[in-house]
Image 1 (tube, rainbow, N blue to C red):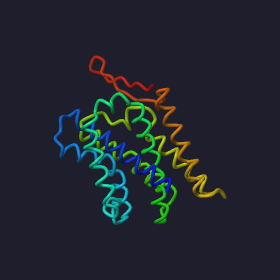
Image 2: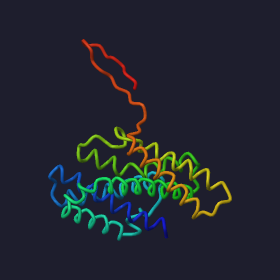
Image 3: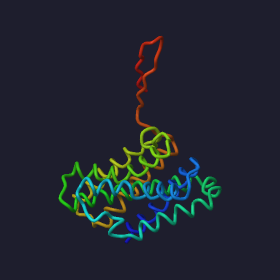
Length: 212
């Protein structure tokens, strides 16, 4: 039940971030709904297709799709409030990332995938919706350029994998994994923590490699 509540919070917040991205590109309402839905449900859809896991989550539970569409439309009515409360939505986005990661891991585990594929499943579920949002709205993907994001998903899956092999109650495993991942993500935002970056600069026609 707890995971379901967090999942609903996650898809609503992700839908709103998708709606805002669409608004910055002056898309019509169809574009807003499309981007909102892709942001919220795209990662899970790609996961289910790759793992041959049917029916798709939003096909099995159509109210998730309706909820994302409504959240996307609602966001068009309160853009100033959302912008002023950016930290709140960064937190909600982090909740979505961690929740989607755990759900993606669980689904892969339930159908008998290896631990590595479970981690990849969690990663795809957690980050691919936002990745597709940024690509479709022609923005630099957060997952590739901003604070620790995809790596937080991988760490969360690693914590979850470790804990499910202990004697802890499964609900407690979910709670510990969730808050561990959430804290890591919020600390990354607060202190601007990044992985080392790689860049190539052209100097007098020659490429200069820089790793920092």
